[in-house]
Image (cartoon, rainbow over all chains, first blue to last red; front, top):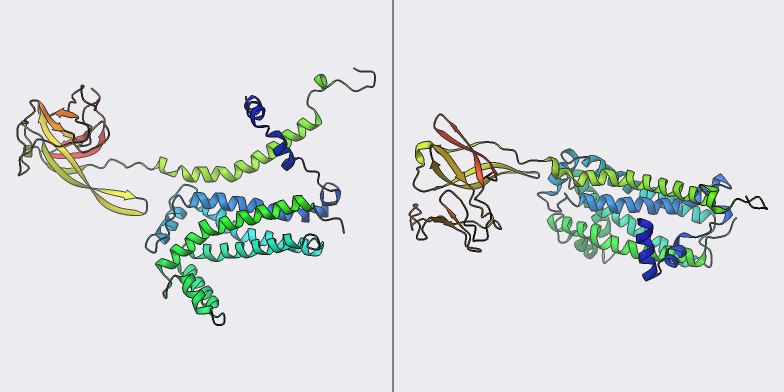
Length: 223
Length: 181
């Protein structure tokens, strides 16, 4: 049945060449773990992406119950953790996945560094990679506040004060991050909006550029 | 069997390419399912939460008569996510052949609040519309004092009723359900 549905769409839109271009990609021998086990280091980038996808999915589902408001945020997180079916599993996926994204991303960066893959003509992709790194760190920083517990509150107090210590423009950066003088309702809504609307948009654009450049330039040669 | 020893495609059974496609697809599907299963279960949590039916006392049997329904407001405890609160419920209560009939004011067409025939002070009075005692302001639905609908108007079933219990003359109301006529 699916084959027939596919044929029906393909007859009209000729989609086969589109996905063939994406999926039928010959992996060079030196990055294939089947040839040499140590080539698994080339999987770190893809694994980072896999975890990012699960982060996006688990985040979407957490948003079914979470409320970014100083009265309800902690209560809703408590409700997710202790009341909702598999709530602590889904929250756990997002919590542990957050650390895992950063670990995998770092391993990926080390692989690119030690195989010299950042060298010409791939410098621009390294730059985009660094931007992705910054966006992911921003995800971590903004997401940390959302449970609105003591740890979240004081970690953000410290973080925003560090931002405030930048010469000259520091105080302005801090005010914009906090949304005023007091770390409170406006900080929470800001961090929530940045975490779930702004950063995902940046991240998806940067990832698209990152992947496009890999395809365009190919995987770097063997050492 | 061809001369070169290669069997024609048709009787090869599972080809290497097909096997690899299935193996890869199966692994991918398993990974996707292991991520999605807890997420979907998580989103289905409201299905296992029922509003529960605890009975609330609304008055004595003698507070109600056989002539006209009487409007009763009462409070029930309600859990709304992580919030606990009281919700105000409304019932039109009338006696019918010794039984208590407690009707929900929700129109059975699209859920507007039906109005009973009452005077300015809120006391039940005979309807100006003959046997039709409840009128819905939204689409002209109308019901008798026992909540029976006029089938020529939009609502196609009688007003829903509360579960009623009478204990030592006290009237208790439970959850709302549709009438089986």
